[in-house]
Image: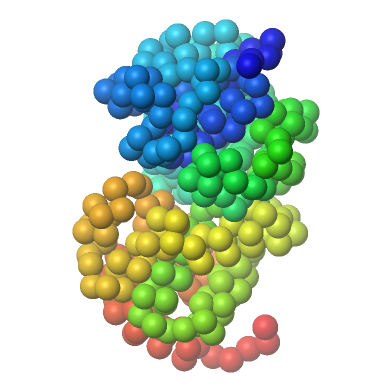
Length: 334
């Protein structure tokens, strides 16, 4: 089944891009999926399933795989970009000359751009200008569960309320509910910082520090996330919602999280490189830890947990030493 609306193009054929393409297709919207790896795309088109990143999730007839970028964009108004943060600018730059004048852009990219410290919406505005409707999709979602059609809720924040509402309506269905927001900064900061904290949660659990430590890390991590977001212009209430506390708790507590698995692997004695190879997908929290540290220092925002996770990742500090540093900080009101 398909609708008479223009197709949606999804750029990024990893697990999350594929899952969102499937969810759009379930709403009877024609969807085109494109990725960088042409060999992988041909396999997906033949098998009608992304066996590498989302095995078992069969493609409906209205989800088509495109190996040619120009063809994928032709006649498309709405475009979703789902690539790692370090690839967002390159992808948008490649798309820019191909876009229709009325094209609208949304992304499921999480994290600061490492070289500039910019959030995804700032990168998009630099590349595409600030006149287009733009939106970010984020919240407590694992690609596998979305691909399997399990009940899920997420947040869509946009600079255009009608665009956010249309995306929410298109994505929402029997087992999927999308909420809207105007706080793009808050939603993006939540998506970046939670990945760093999830590495810390994996480290904590892997070292056997217990439930008390885990909840303290999550709760005080939420405080750090909120501090940074507010300093950047976000609404503090955003961090109590799906894209803040919701995504943070999910990513810190379930082993479907690549970032949590990175922490567990580090706790077992593996190097960051070996853990990354074992996971076989981009672990956004590793680069995010560096970016968050730099942005926090520029804004003079105190983020001790994120700072210690950075030290573990980049300065080879023993996790137990990092915990000792945190526990010995001066006492103060909560």
